[in-house]
Amino acid sequence: MSQIRDTKPRWAEGLPDTPPWRSLGTSVLVDTPWMRVTRHPAIAPTGADADYVVMRPKNVGTGVLPLHDDGTVSLVGQHRFALMRYSWEMPEGGAPEGEDPFEAVKRELAEEAGLTAQHWRAALDVDLSNSITDERAMTWVAWGLEATETAPDETEVFLTARVPFRDLMAEIARGAVRDGLTVATAYRAYHMAREGELPAALARAMLGA
Image (cartoon, rainbow, N blue to C red; front, side):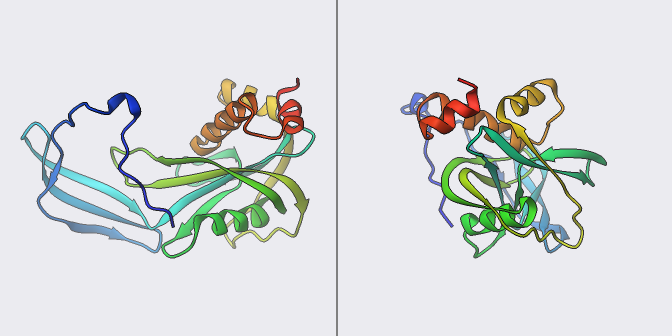
């Protein structure tokens, strides 16, 4: 698994850092196969005493936006427990410690969307909701797609849909597609298509050019 480099944005180079948070200890409040919740007596950057709780996933989040040659994308729909509502998303999953996230996302593409891909390009490597969790997610775009067998987990029931990329962007703007990784990766794919980072024919099909 690639390590996260402590790299500043170019505009911040030369600027001093603000004072850091300091943890004075750790206790575990919840420990499951998927996450750990830790509590920390802490000192805030202002010097004030604080009581901080952090949710620490045990997997690296992964996701892939599958791009078909005709400019459509494959999405999966499922009911999400935390929000108790339905969600349309790109295929997503997680890589446990010791597994390469790229291998994990290839597995998720097959299991959820019934697809394999000949071509992959990294899209995002991001921190999610970094005030309450140290969760990391990595996403890709993929093309050169071929069908394979699906294999959802025992708790998963999916619908699948193949929709024009422009329709996905419109539904994101309308608030009908809300999953954060899907939204961010779709916008990244749009930028890649506009900036020549994807094959020209694929970009034209995506953008309707």
